[in-house]
Image (cartoon, rainbow, N blue to C red; front, side, top):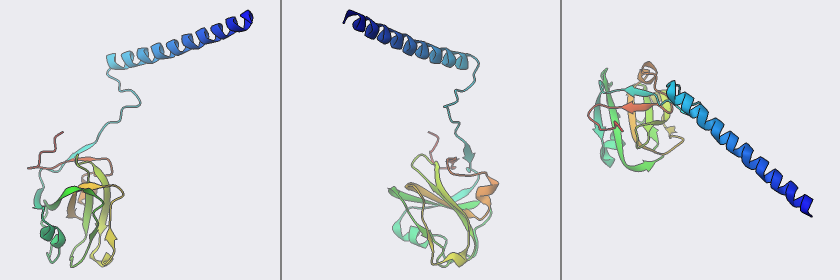
Length: 166
């Protein structure tokens, strides 16, 4: 019985030593990474796109949201529409009474793109388009603008006149 106890104690001590060695090794990697300004592999860099040069029409009431860009002949270059909702949800959009294709970009409460539909044509009506994740804001831009700015899912969007710097 005494030999069995010693073996168990030795195994436990060996396990503790291996765990401590692993922790110390990770700490050394972190310290070296910090000293060389090299990000750790687990750190994800956030991409931010600045759309502050685009003039957005704010759409923040149910009546304005329902109308959206319907019946407009076009959207002037350098302009867009920003839909502001009261709480995050999977808001769907359609192309009823639209006369030109658009990009639809759904943003969460931190202005990070959660979904995007590009070059949505008026001919898609009555189909509706909904995001894969809840959003608080939706941007409509002329078709192709999202691609021109390199906007994709996970992109943080900076909008002029809206405090979304944090």
